[in-house]
Length: 267
Ligand SMILES: CCCCCCCCCCCCC/C=C/C(=O)SCCNC(=O)CCNC(=O)[C@H](O)C(C)(C)COP(=O)(O)OP(=O)(O)OC[C@H]1O[C@@H](n2cnc3c(N)ncnc32)[C@H](O)[C@@H]1OP(=O)(O)O
Image 1 (cartoon, rainbow, N blue to C red):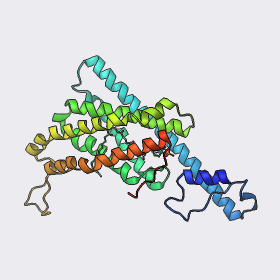
Image 2 (tube, rainbow, N blue to C red):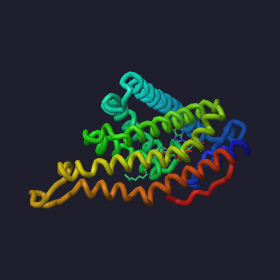
Image 3 (tube, rainbow, N blue to C red):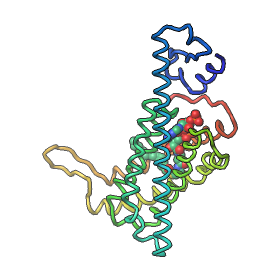
Image 4 (cartoon, protein in one colour):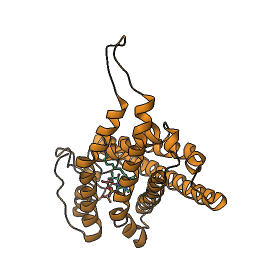
C-alpha cells in the first residue's frame, strides 16, 4: 500500500485534484472492494496503458521525424556546400513535425504528461509562429544564416528531448541522454532564441515594404492591423517569456539530475 501511495504522489496525481481517489491495488483494497471500485480501477489502468502506448508511439515518431530532418540538412550541406536553399529543401518535413507538436499542448491539457499547459503552449506556439508566419511566409529571409542557426539548434534539442521521453517511458534511459536533455539546453536555448530573433529582425523590412498580413483603414470591417508591429511585439515578448522557460528548465534540471524536490508556483 505504501508503495502505491508513493507512486500516487510521485505521479503528481492529486496535485490538481486533492480529492482524487487513492489508487488501489490487489494487495490493498481490491479483493474486498465493491464491483464498482474494481471496474473503476480497471478503467484507470487501461487509460494509463493507452496513454503510455500513445506517448511511446508519439515520441518515437517525433524522434524519427527530427532525425530525418537532421540527415536531410547534413546531406544537403555535404552535396551543395552551401546553406542557400537548405530551408526550401526541408520545409515540408519541418512544417509537418513542428505542427504535429501541437499535440503536446493536448497531452498536458488531458493530464497524460506532468507539464504545464502554459509553458508547453508558449514553447510550441512560438515555434509554430516562427515556422509558418515568419520563415515560410517571407521567402527573402529563408537563406539567412540565422534560419540555419535555429534549425540546427531545434533539431539537436528535439532529437535529445524525444529520445529522452521514449527511453524514459521504456524504463531504459541511458545516462548520457538524461545528461544531454538537462544540460544542452543551457547553451542551445539562448542560441535558438538568438537565431529566432535575428530571423524576425531580418524579416522586418520586407514586412514593412509589402504590408503583408496587414489591414489598413478604411476597410469594411473598420479594423486596422499591422503585422510589422505585431512582429515587434512578438520579439519584445521574449523579454518576459524566455527567462520563465529557461528557469523552468533549470528547475527541471535540479529535480531530475540532483533529485531536488521543487515546489512549482501556480502558472
Ligand atoms: C501564444 C504565443 C506566444 C508567443 C510568445 C513568444 C515568446 C516566446 C519566448 C520564448 C521562445 C522560446 C523559443 C524556443 C526556442 C528553442 O526551442 S531553442 C532550442 C532549445 N530549446 C530547448 O531546450 C527547449 C526546452 N524546452 C522544453 O523542453 C519544453 O518545451 C518544455 C515545455 C519547456 C519542457 O518542460 P517540461 O515538459 O516541464 O519538462 P520535462 O522535464 O521535459 O518534462 C516534465 C515531465 O513530463 C514528462 N513528459 C513531457 N512530455 C512528455 C512526452 N512527450 N512523453 C512522455 N513524457 C513526457 C516528462 O517525462 C517529465 O515527467 P517526469 O519525469 O515524471 O517528471
